[in-house]
Length: 264
Image (cartoon, rainbow, N blue to C red; front, side, top):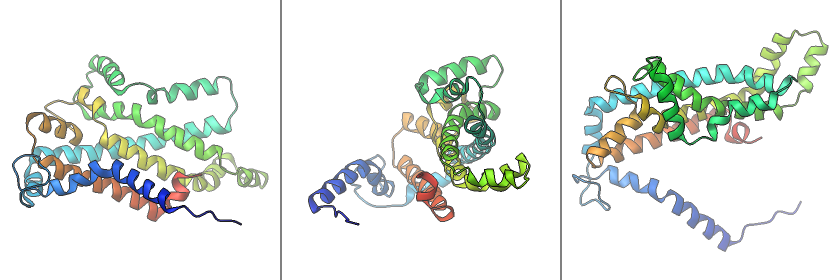
């Protein structure tokens, strides 16, 4: 088999494009170690004062734990709902299946500000504003289509020969699902869970419509902080969020492998 090697000019071009795309993220790291009172690059001197200030900021810490708990609950509910829904969409034949699938994934096509305003209008009449329940339901509207689409793709590309063999050997439908289908679907579940957690944790536009003095998430708290003042504390918080994202990716890589999890 002939292997085509990438030329050096193409490698340099790809490296330059990656550097251009990652430059804003890379610049956050040195700015977070700035000792200045304002956001400035390059910093006039180096310090870890803003990391210490971040961990002493009670509002930021409370918002962080709220975001973690919210993202974990939303991820668990998204997977619990999306797994049987995706199985029904890919394994069963019934009228209107495509219409239902498009309806369930429609929030992916709507602008988030329009979706947030619609959720605000509906939730206001049910008393769900500035509550954890309201945030969970609102984030489910966003994360569930991602989970459903990822799991539907994973199930549609799955080899059904093992399921058919289990059925011919006398296994009941639930046994086939839990002993055959679910283990084979695990890479897709890990991918969907990681995606749902990151989407929920990072959601800011819709959350802005629903938060209040009683409850707030980390992205909303950072948005309000930057609105009032701009100092390297936001850069320190951004670095920690970047590291959290990389940590989740590394866990997925260690557990399943990115190639098996995200690529079919």
